Image (cartoon, rainbow, N blue to C red; front, side, top):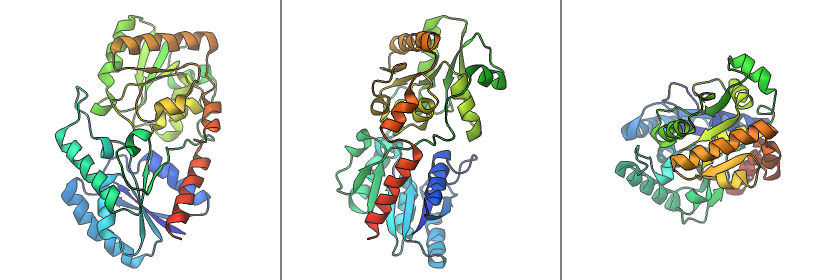
Length: 323
């Protein structure tokens, strides 16, 4: 089985860690995989790149094109010849992109409607990350497969040692925000306002982004809690990574977070009220003092969100569509 990953490659950081991790896991499970980055931004850029992709497909034979994100899917659909097209939508490509006040921009809403139309009428198989996304689609060929987490990479370790490695105070109460705070949809100002309400000088909010993947587990193990205040998500990797490291969590009720957390002690869902977020942070910090770590890793295994299980689900999709 030969598969080509098509994805946006115009970011400075290169391939998304999630896409790279999924690709590596597929290769380990016997899939012959190659990558094709779409390197030009904007609609015109994707259209230009689709012709380059078609030339590439003439030279190299694949059974399946697996496109990640809506715009990459459009380029792949234009370029495809006889290959089967599988599309993974990630979140805002189906539900839209937020403004600072939480509302969805008109342009992104129009693009999301366009992606929904294409998913319902053109693509051979569609994968979405959450129930919220799935309910937007009416096609029969939609599968709900959340992102998985590599348990061999993300695991619980000594908080003391992790803080020493990062130069963080042993007596501080460390909260981590694992995303670029400038991304509007991540709603970082809500985390800041909630922190201000705590009025506790020992609480430190550490933003974590543009870090090498092997550094992330150190932050999860150093933290008293992970904070996620996004307006929307699909299947946020940070939640599952934190759970794999048994890190307490405070998160808005977005994407598949509710389903993933379940009834895990030390993990709290919030509304978009800064007081509610602040109260849940206080509860998470109290939990960290009393019990230190959660049983989030056990929950990940129970619901089959380790990368190995998710990879097998994707391979099952591949086998079904090329029969």
